Length: 238
Image 1 (tube, one colour):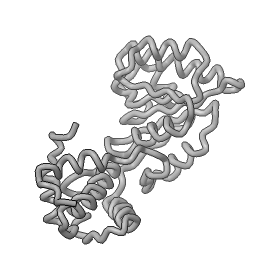
Image 2 (image 1 turned 135 degrees about the vertical axis):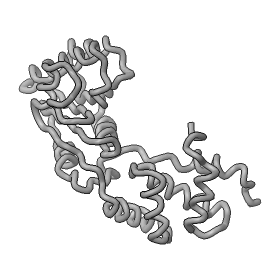
Image 3 (image 1 turned 180 degrees about the vertical axis):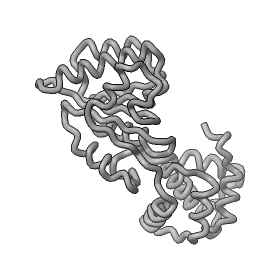
């Protein structure tokens, strides 16, 4: 097979190495093991509010739950407000997941308020549902209507902490080992301090580097990583 021309290398990265779909299994928990365990064991009639800074993994965990529970519905700031109200007016799906509640407008917040009331009413019935909501700060500090702030704390609440660099290095070493990829420690240290902080993006870059090394027939080194990233700046990604 002929060598691939350099102009095709960016397409190689974009097409072959998308970030893995979020699951509870590929979430690097660090100090957040209690929150992950609670999500694994979540039962109908229970609710969880996850909060933490950007990059702490709250959206990863929310989307992982949506994939985990058949019939789950995901709502966010891009969802039309009448959809919130319509869900609250009928039988709830097995899981209602609401991402970044701090971004919702007044009408959407009213819908979430109604959903919490509906969730609580059905909690002890055979139509009980699970509710998972995420935000960027603690319930009572949210810039939301007062009655909704209190409802965010009605059941389980977990603060998600950012992974330490040591946790990220350990996870990336394990990921590289699983791919039989020999990576120098300085390459991984540069990657987490200079390129990305999100673990899904970091592992996607590592996977892309593996493919790029094979395509260019060059060893995996820090200069090769920098060359690959220079050919694939974030602004060029769709």
